[in-house]
Amino acid sequence: MGFVHPTLGTWSVMWVVKTVYVGNVLSEPAFSNSIVGGIPVGLLSGTVTNLDNGFPLFGATININPGAHILQTDYNGHYELVLFNGNYNVTASLINYTDATTDVIITDGDTTLCNLQLDLVEANPDTPEVIAATALLGCSPNPFSTHSTIRYAVKAPCHITLEVFNLLGQKISTLLNTEVKSGNFTCQWNGTDNNGRRVSNGIYYLRMTAGDYSSSRKLVLLK
Image 1 (cartoon, rainbow, N blue to C red):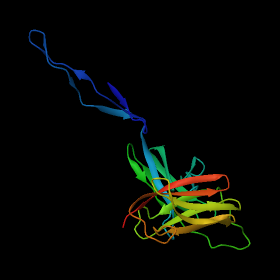
Image 2 (cartoon, one colour):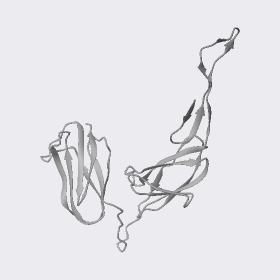
Image 3 (tube, helix red, strand yellow):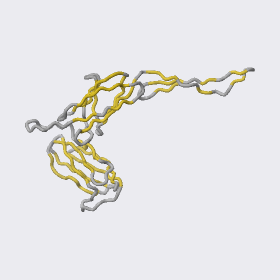
Image 4 (tube, one colour):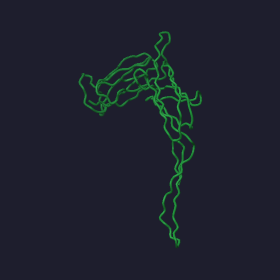
């Protein structure tokens, strides 16, 4: 009987054995110890964040052994890749940030964590900021008790709304309803409705609409 690990590509084999006694009497079948083998690989996993505020960075490029493996972080700043055992150089880069690089060792069957922090380059007024895509990037902290900072990016000038809804789909608060230029932005929700009243604990949904783009995130309010 064999089993294959779906991510790491390793396999294990066990045998069903019986003991033959005098008079050709057989014991009940039993599994042997397993033998593990396969390709010697491990998992590289990590998160890329802003050095100043700890926010995850979406779309950062991860370059492993320059040019051998290239991937990008997701909306949570996370990345992961299965690699053969060995030593690797890992570099994270993102427009408007300084690169960060480190060395890691991948070990058979293990997960190697490699978290990198990027430092925002001081803005140059002669160099326009380049935005890869319009996106609702995240909310932090989440869950929150006093306020949550909402991060979003806008690739081209457009009309944008940021709205908070309860589980019944009722609009609780409109945080933003205006025209914006291209750039990276933040705003905050302090857990109040449009009348300034504190709402109850629970789950809420933040919806961002910017031109043809629309996305939602869950927010959890805990007092």
